[in-house]
Every structure is written in C-alpha cells, then in structure tokens.
Image 1 (tube, rainbow, N blue to C red):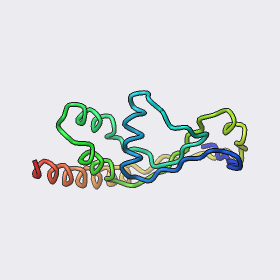
Image 2 (cartoon, rainbow, N blue to C red; image 1 turned 180 degrees about the horizontal axis):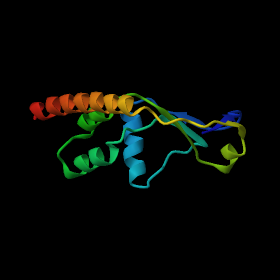
Image 3 (tube, one colour; image 1 turned 60 degrees about the vertical axis):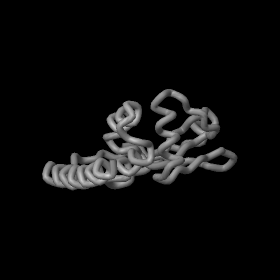
Length: 129
C-alpha cells in the first residue's frame, strides 16, 4: 500500500457522508455522469452489492430510499478520488507498506455478519411492500 499526504490548500474538496446525497452521486457515477465540480472527492466506499442494488433500482423492484438502506449495511471505509491534475500535483508520497492477507476465518466471519444483516434489512423492505 502506498501512503500519500495531500496538501488541500486551494483545492475544491467535496466530502460525502453515507446518506442520500452520496447515494445519488454514486448512482449518477455508475452511469458515467460525474457532474460534481471538485478537485477531490472524499467519501464512503459503496459496499460490494452496489452493482446489484443499482440494477434492482433500474428494474423498478426497489426505490432509491430502500436501496440506500441496503448500502448502509456493513462497515464504512473511506476513499479519496483525485479528479484533477491540480489535486494530483499536491500529492506527496510518504511510504510504501506491505499488507498481509486478512485471516480466512476473520474474513469469513465478517462476510457472514454482513450477509445476516443484509438479509434482515431486505426482508424488512420486502415485508413493507
């Protein structure tokens, strides 16, 4: 993993939380419509079900508000998107670190906990229909 430092001075930075604005931005981006004017975008990483969830919305099975409930399941990790050359020029490389693999049992336990939570939320949504 490479570690960088970003000099944010003079950059237009947009920060998202896991909410409707973030979900709407992700939904537009999956259609290659990034209309956000910013040098840097910082926000939550959408979980691994994003493509399936967006497909379910497109099919009309789920409303966006219902899909957002599913995307909130699981841990929140942050990503940083450098969108402009100006922002890229403000990156300073700090170091490179080798990351070990996550233990299989830990990864399996995390996946099982996620699956249980996702299924519970989905049942609640389907039960409301």
